[in-house]
Length: 176
Image (cartoon, rainbow, N blue to C red; front, side, top):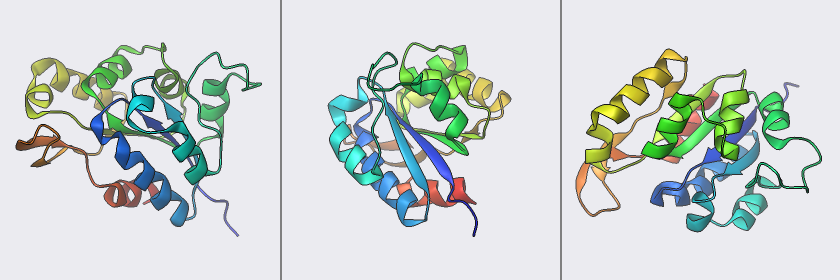
């Protein structure tokens, strides 16, 4: 029997972070093992306890948390078969493009030697900004796979490009 795919889900601080719960459920339902990493801002949108319950594993929120006996970003990056950043804010895209390592999400992605998938979520103007587009180009140059965004209703109430791809579609593409 094949080993279950091991997914590290990195969640950044977008209103779309609530979709991380559905992402975890979809990955688990598809037979994957999931570990979740949150930025500080993400934990304001979605509860670490909820994600830990759904994934049946501790959630990493702090690079220096003494509860993790190993350096979490290194051990998770080495454990993973794939890393998924969903949602990815404009700030997270920028940090990943620069190679920052100041948050657990940045550090896991920077340490990953496996495929990385990024699902942006932001308002249309932020998505269209030349800096964001340059960051996307940089990430694609690193070999990361961008999943979206798509056009649709945004948290602002407007309709436009910037909506995160639906969780079931992300899971399908990541596990393909």
